[in-house]
Each structure stands twice: as structure tokens, then as C-alpha cells.
Image 1 (cartoon, one colour):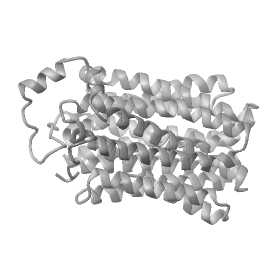
Image 2 (cartoon, rainbow, N blue to C red):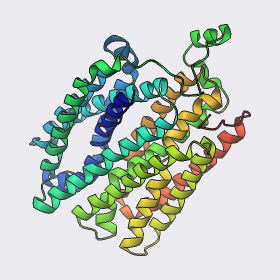
Image 3 (spheres, one colour):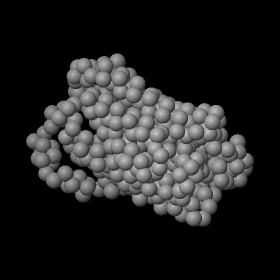
Length: 402
């Protein structure tokens, strides 16, 4: 149903709206509260912990109240947390709001990824994450407008929170549509085939059994490292621009929005490319382009070059996450795919949880000019892990369009 798909895309915009807000507001927020710059990592950890906890509970909640109600309630929760942050008198009020923000984001992310994977064809996975890109691109632009006008980050949070309230109303109105959509296989044309007796036996075993499948560890590490890189640039990118490229806070916020815009536009394009190009090729191309952008970012060639580097990194990032998730069934078999996708999501959040605060702390204690060196290291390791995974998998990837 086209109308429901539009609603789902709108919901994923709501998921993206808060994701880039903290990074562009922190340079002013920590000064107002008199906090060490490195404490941004603590706030990020709190959000991620809430996200991980909710991701583990999402399956049970979907079965209990349904995807539509869970999504609407979760967006409402993120709205209230953002509005709460906008009125926070101290950092101690922001921390519990951040927990609620993580819980809401985790539910929306897991529930909608599962719903689209079950009910729509694979091209929509790239486009779904493209609309996440719309959210993370728009919110820094909104924040930068308030920073230019009055230098107040609170108005930016309040505005995004009110937008989330509006999106919640749309989701509540659309609840009857969720019951009308019947499942459709995302992996092949037509209906999903019946599971064999052997497949049912595999699914009935320990959920940790798929971890023993060759290549699964590489797949988990790839998403963990990729998501950490994406999040680190989103969180510390504005600080990097302000401190090493002499960019003012409002301009830095706009530049970070173009980085996320690269991710958004790249995923829109990748959705069409996926009809002809397989997952493996899209992932390789994405890593290559992001690596080139990181190399340019390292070179002190001026502000325009820095802007281009951010855009290239965003474009390179675009296909890596959705193509990695979609490739799971082709790489490891559809009977193990649900469990492995769950491990990949856990790996993604864990990568952010571990690496983001470490890189932030090291950069704060030394210089943020070191960030591009970390990015080049991430790119090299990501390439090695991806090629090791490709070599490990004996069965070639099927085309995304098949």
C-alpha cells in the first residue's frame, strides 16, 4: 500500500531529526553549562544504551501492541524528550531526557526496519534510510537558523520537538493502515517460500548458533565500525570545523547538514542502482568514495575543499548500511538472517558506544585535527574486513534486484 509506505518514510524522517541535533548544538551547549567538551561522549553513550535496551524489547512489543502503535508512541517519546532538553536548566536534566530519546529512537529503528524487510521489496530499504537522511539533514539547518538569529540552541530543540509532535499525530491517524498490509518477501520476487523442516529446526535452536556461521563476525564488525565512523563525524564534525577550519558555529551546522545530505542523496540514488548493481559492489564503491573524502579532509586545502570532503564522505556512506543489512540473507541464508540482522544492529550500536567516546576524549585532550587520521584508519580497516568477508563467503551475492 503506497499510502502506508509514505507514512513509514515520514516516520523514518522523525528518526533522523534528533540524530544530528546534539552534535551541532554541543559546541554552545557545553559552554553554557560550563562542561568539559569531552562529556559529549557521555551523553551519546546514554542515548545509545537506551536505544540498545529498546531494540532488544522491540520484538515483544510489536507482538503485543503492533508496529503502528509502537512507532507512534516512540515518536511521541522522542518529541517529549527533545522538548524537555530545550527547557533543561542543567546537564542533569538533559541526561534522563537522553535516556528517553534513546528508547524512542531504538523502537522506531528496529520496528520499521523489520516491517519494511517483511512487507516491501529490497529497493525500499535504501529509500527508507534515505528518508532518515532527510531528517538528519534538515535538523542542523533548523538549528543553524536559530544560531544565526539569536545564538540559542534551545529554540532549535524545541522546534524539532514540535515537529515530532506533528509527526506523532500523522502516525496516530494512520493506525488503521498498518493492519491492511500483508507480508511480502523482500528477498525474491513473489511470496516467501515455506520453510523446510530443517530450517525450522535451525530456528528452534539457540539464537546464538548463527554466530558460528563463517563470516558473521566480519559482518558484525563491519557495521560496528561503519556506524561508529558515521556517528563520530556527526557528533564531532562541527567541533572539528570550528576549531581547525575557523568556521563559525552556524556555518558548521550547515556544513554538517550537507554531510548528512550526502548520505540522503546517495541512498536515493542507491535505491535505483540496486536494480542493476549487487550489494557487494555498492558496499565497495561506498567505502572507496568515503575513503577518498577522508583523504581530502586530511589535506589543509581550504574551506571549500573541506566542504567537498564532507559531502563525498556522506555520499560514500550512503549504501554501506542498507546494503549490508540486505545482503545478510544472501550471504548467510534466510533461516539465520533474522538473528544475524539483530546481531548486526547490536554491533552497530556497540561500535558507537565504544569508539565514539574514546575518539572524542582523545581529540579533546590533544587536537580535533587528528580526526581525519582516525577516519583514514577506519576506512582501511573497513576495507580489509569487507574483503575478508567477501573471501569467506563461498556463495556469491545475489543481485539486490532479484
